[in-house]
Length: 78
Image 1 (spheres, helix red, strand yellow):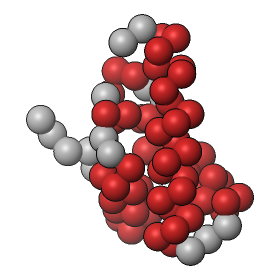
Image 2 (tube, rainbow, N blue to C red; image 1 turned 120 degrees about the vertical axis):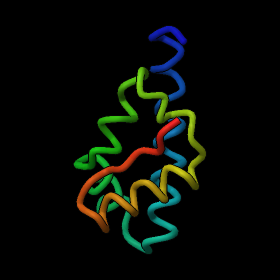
Image 3 (tube, helix red, strand yellow; image 1 turned 90 degrees about the vertical axis):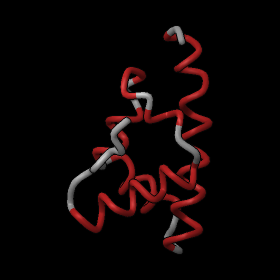
């Protein structure tokens, strides 16, 4: 995927993930964005090469929740 395509799809993925965080954690949009923005998952999502953006919103939320619980991000291995 070229950079322009990635930049176009990333906001959609982040929006879906933020909606999932808000619903599942029952927190405000601002709090959800702050938590996500400061997470390792967010850094990985912004790196097209990691292919983390391929995951569904449910899988991304599970990774996010796990990162909050464990204090570190553990991405699945292929």
